[in-house]
Image 1: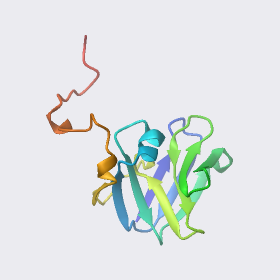
Image 2: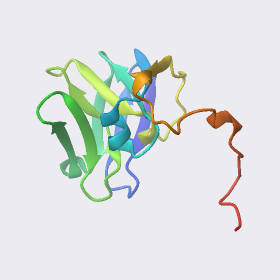
Image 3: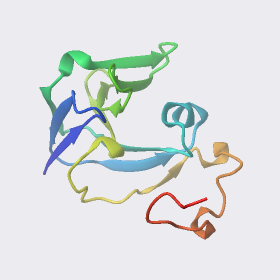
Image 4: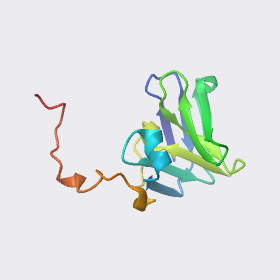
Length: 134
């Protein structure tokens, strides 16, 4: 499979070629801070290849205290971007950075015990096509 992706401002574009081994929604405190949301949605692959199409020099990595919690991001808009971890053996791709359709579904929630206290029964929250009035 081939997937195209980009950051919000469009300065960084990339291509992923290959298959994803796993797709997890991570609720750990670090991933919640990274995304500003209830969880991160990351795809993982030990075989897929990342190719930067444009803006590679604007793609940077942040390694939290050198502990291996790594976030790739665009230095212009801050959008999450793919990164390579574990001595080049693991490609981690934020699902939201992919512009193509993704052919796999999340396999599960991880670090669920660390979920935000407001992250309950979200399927019952009203749904709007656009920003609601008022």
